[in-house]
Length: 255
Image (cartoon, rainbow, N blue to C red; front, side, top):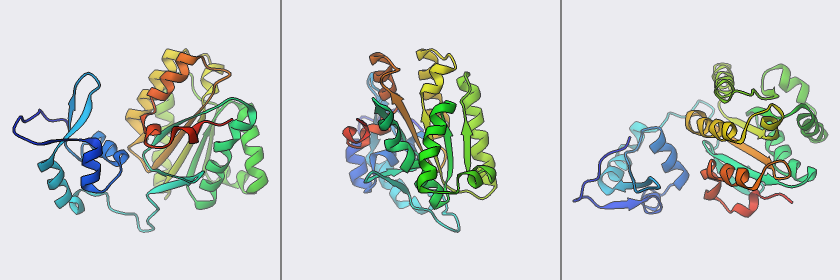
C-alpha cells in the first residue's frame, strides 16, 4: 500500500525502518510489495519512506499479519555459497565461462532437491543437460524428482507473459501437492535461443519480479552468460534484480 506524505510525520528510509523492526531490507520490500506494510514512494527513483507510527503499528500487530507457518515450518532462507538468501528474493548472477555456469546452478538445485524443495530449471536443452549431469554426480535421484514433479524442467517460452503463467501455474500445482518452498534457476540464454529481444527479456524479468518472485516461498536465480549478452543488457539485468544488491555483489560474479 502506498500512502501520501504527512508533513508532520517522521519519515524513515528503508535502512532505518529495517533497523527499527530488526528485519532485513528485503523483508520490508516484500511486505510493501504485498501491501502488508504501508510506505510512501518519493522522488524520481520512487524510494521507499516509512512513517514511524506505521512501523510501530505493524510491529504491535505482527502476529495478526504474519503468514501462518506450515505444519512443518521451513527455514526463512536458503544458504548458498555461505550467503543466506531469503525466500522472495530474485537474484542475478553473471558468468563468463562454462565452469562459471555451474558455480551457482549445481549446488542451488542439488541442495534444494535434497531438502525437499520444489525446483525449477529453465534453460536450453544443452545447458540443462550439462547442469543435470553435474547434479547427478552428487545426487542420484534426478529422474525420480522429475517423475514426481519435484523438479520441473523447461526450455522456456518465447512469450514472457506466457512464461510467467507457466511458472505460476506450476507453483500453484506444486503447492497443492504439499510442497512449501521452492527454488528457480533460469539460465537466460534460453531467451536468446528462442528469439526474444533484449526489450522483451527485460519486460519478462520485470513481470516475473512483480507478479511471482515475492509472492511465494521462492528463491529465484537468473544467471547471465556475459559472452552472449551485451554490456547494456547485463546492466539492465542487474537493474531488474534489485534483491542482488542486498548482498555483496562480488559473490554473484563467477569467473
